[in-house]
Amino acid sequence: MPSSHEITELLQAWSGGDTQALDRLTPLVYNELHRSAQRYMARERPDHTLQATALIDEVYLRLVDGGRVTWQDRNHFFAVCARLMRRILTDFARSRHYKKRGAGARQITFDESLHVTPEPAEELVVLDDALRGLAEVDKRKAEVVELRFFGGLSVKEAAAVLRVSDETVKRDWRLAKLWLLREMSAEQGDGC
Image 1 (cartoon, rainbow, N blue to C red):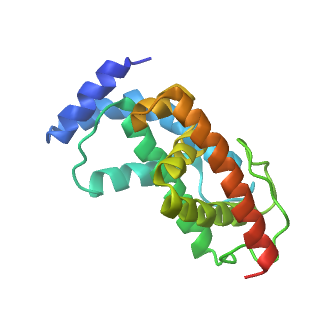
Image 2: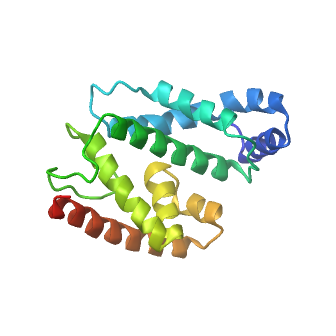
């Protein structure tokens, strides 16, 4: 298991334009990225055409093609990767013509591990819409959800990324879950 310091050094070297740093970094972070991708894919339907490895490949391509990022540390890197995975899966679900606001979808709950269902991509679209709404109201709370739920970061790791206290992350997490639950229920109830 590579040290957080080693990963941070490679990220900073990559930020500085050292392409060989990316080559050395990739094998060090692959297993953790694969675990995150598997968590995402476990929420998708069993016959989903996108697999965990393909999701990681797409994240890698977006990281390389997305221009230079000034990486802060390991946690920042995994937070960005989590955000990219969320976007990729949400874009994929939307491209498959799922109903935009979950109209007609069954009632769902928001918890730390969405249950595997026949049409989880639809749920992901509803969650993504609600999360975008939360970001308009309170960006940090939306980031906490993204880091904890999608990125799998612990309270301590999320606090480090956001540069806030553990207690702030815990409070934001509780309030964000309540807000999202209310919004997701309203979206499904109004039939739009």
